[in-house]
Length: 335
Ligand code: NAD
Ligand code: UFG
Image 1 (cartoon, rainbow, N blue to C red):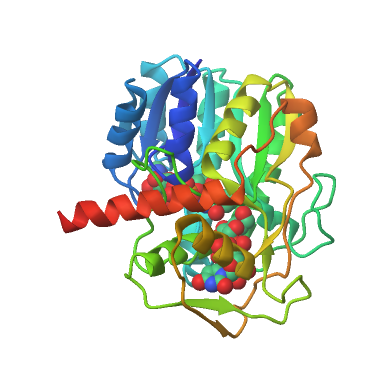
Image 2 (cartoon, rainbow, N blue to C red):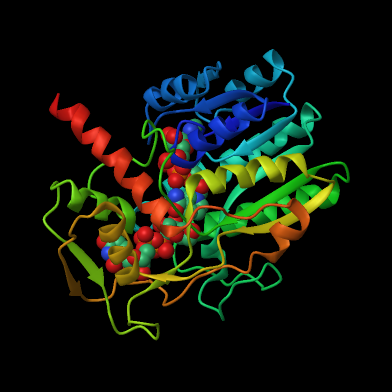
């Protein structure tokens, strides 16, 4: 298939490009590089020895999208492009609503016009809010507490309504849990700008000496050791989940949790990282981060049943691969 991957230069997008290329798909990337660089695209080509056609465009630019669809016969789209920092979305709501919603609407519009019927959307476990774990797809999404989460919930609703009105349109709404890790080559991975918001990139930056110590946000949650529990999933497993969703897409709307089904606490992740990489991660317990929920992990039986997909990598592999990528980056900077 010819697959248009919006946001394909970003963390999850580039790993998915590698997985798609390795399965024989042709990949066209559209990215404005607001949170990535062309370097990841070059590295993905190096890993796979295959070509990626890429367009430096903004997905909120309808003419630019039109131009791609008129130059290529697109069979399906995977829509990763979006802004994703929860805290920033509270400060910049208009930026988030505009970027994340308008891009989804315009991409769907151009797909319908060009009879492209396969649409995969990057949603998030955040739409579940705080409910009984494990989260299952049949739970009603709860109103989220930040504009970022709202853009995911709204995009899901918009795509669902479009699919209802267009019976040949097929949509897969993929609710990711917590992607971490990197391609085993160490060439591509998560490289956030500035101070990382997320746990694993913070841990790897403490490991490299770039940050002094990790702040653990709260140890008074109702969990195994009081720290927050999440369902960490290796980014390559997540990437394979997209290929499976694309290969198995049928008309209508399909919602899938992409996680491992296993919850891991912050302290457990620190310990797993230390053991996997024989390193020490200094940390201190601080106050809870506003908006954090206690536990989030997935019921993954639907993806297993319908997509024949399950996550394969364990926490040790996630920790090793995350560190290999960060360590490589640091070595390159030193040289
Ligand atoms: P990322 O920031 O690394 O990648 C997003 C990419 O989209 C970047 O390359 C960025 O330059 C591009 N982009 C943003 N707005 C654009 C626009 N208007 N036009 C063109 N390109 C644009 O983020 P990621 O972690 O790879 O996330 C990918 C998707 O998955 C996002 O939609 C995100 O909300 C969603 N998601 C991520 C997580 C996570 O923990 N990483 C969890 C759940 C859902
Ligand atoms: N945490 C710390 N210290 C840090 C960073 C995080 O203790 O420096 C803790 C958090 O309190 C939480 C856990 O580590 O308990 C995971 O936090 P992350 O920020 O890594 O991930 P979140 O679960 O908060 O959110 C992430 C993405 C969201 C996405 C969600 C579900 O940031 O965009 O996963 O996919 F919606």
